[in-house]
Length: 228
Image (tube, rainbow, N blue to C red; front, side, top):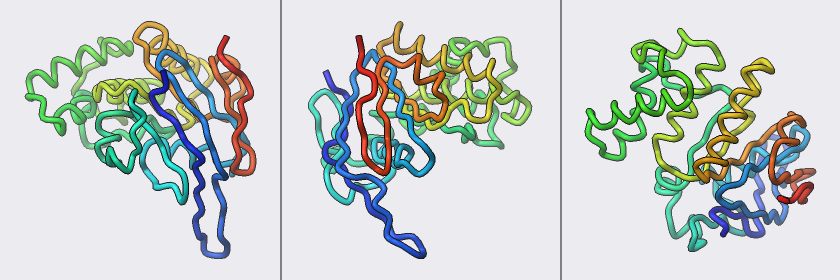
């Protein structure tokens, strides 16, 4: 069953010097329990597509559908979608630099109204789940390695309890060993918890590990590899 989909999505934006048709009638769908890769050269439209799926932009035409009922983001509301349906992980980690790693993970739960004590307890469980149980939760992100920071970002994504994780070049700032560790962690969420993970990547090694691969070229999408 689809949990997220793009339906004939176009996106056109005006740069300083030209009008750019970044997405052209893009249709694709995503299910729980599968690991997806979206590949393509820089400027192909893959990050723009991820932004549309995350509700960070509004399609010029077409629509993004979310949830088992396939409701349009126009009906759901972009903020509600980002709060409840999807979590986003970035190449640059995007952790709050002045908050401890424990506070970074509790943040989504606090804005959703969870009590401080319960949020901290759940945050510790999530840090344990991503292999950071032995790290002092009072540390600031800058005190951690890049691989550790990305795992904190994954723990924070899990804190929202959304079943879809959108990852934009999540290994781009990591060495190969830490990068594979992050991918293994995301794959584990798919295989053991039924998450839907969608990774935008230049790394063909990551694409080879995906269940489904979409390729973007000049704003258009094609299915390169289907699930077995």
